[in-house]
Image 1 (cartoon, helix red, strand yellow):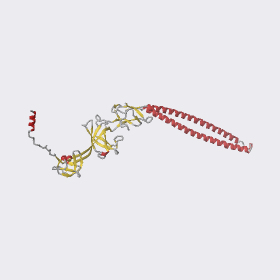
Image 2: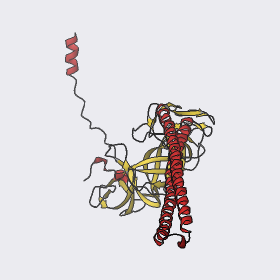
Image 3: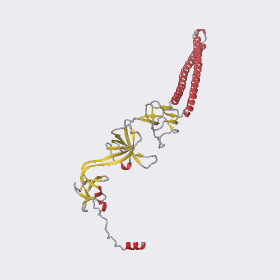
Image 4: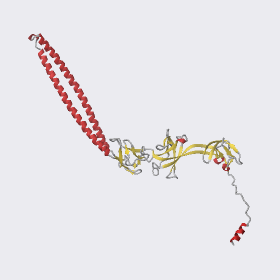
Length: 394
């Protein structure tokens, strides 16, 4: 029975072949309208203003972070936000205390030595003064009472005593100046040691840093690790470790790769859309473009220009620094120009060509193009009918 059915089926006449229906090409039209070219950049939000929390000056070059407030948490004014390990500084503090004691002892020793030296030279001066006075008394004896030789010897003794006295006086003055200079050196050394000790004491007291005002904590990027600061990192005086941003004024920051240099300009309009809220957009304006391209990452071959976009408005509730944002920058803005569908244009030709209804190709001069349309500078008129190149270029 099954064989009979199979034979009956095979014996039926085959249906005639019908080719698939060919969809006619859609007729397209040159129209007049506005044209806007856009470049899409990827960036993130950042605060226009922020309170920076920096590592204070302390004794030594660097010290480790012992505790750090979590990134993104809110803090009150005066709350502890960072603590620096004080072990290294404590050791330095003891060294500087010892330096102060040593400098003080040196100053005292120099002062005593100066006193002894000046007293010795003062005593020598008094001896020379007494000797001069004695010589002058002996020289005052009338010449008639002694031989002329004795009288001349006494006169010569006066001159010698006066020279010795002047010499002792000059030596005393020189010693006073020298000892004062030595004492000044010791005094400066002592003052410097005390200053360094006070600096170390202040550093030790300032290693627990508090928030200057209430706000949101943002941990800063480590300058050479390619990540944010974290507990255990070695930091140095003057380094910015934390920031408290002002959420009332935000801006967008993006990277323009060097291959696109010149594609956008300062003053260009932009539309910023947060990835977290794709249904909400904010108008913006390109305010700065860095003059020098920098590496996107350490040892990277890619380089980019830093672009800043000022936002027309800020939403402190939804917007947070670091949120990713898509930035559409207007690169071309033309009004009332001829626009032709891109599918009817062969831009690779020399010159570019447009395909009219019927298949004829005409040379055209093109302006900028988008994914859908091209600006036609010449070669076509408003209302002309075109056909798509989807079937191939003849």
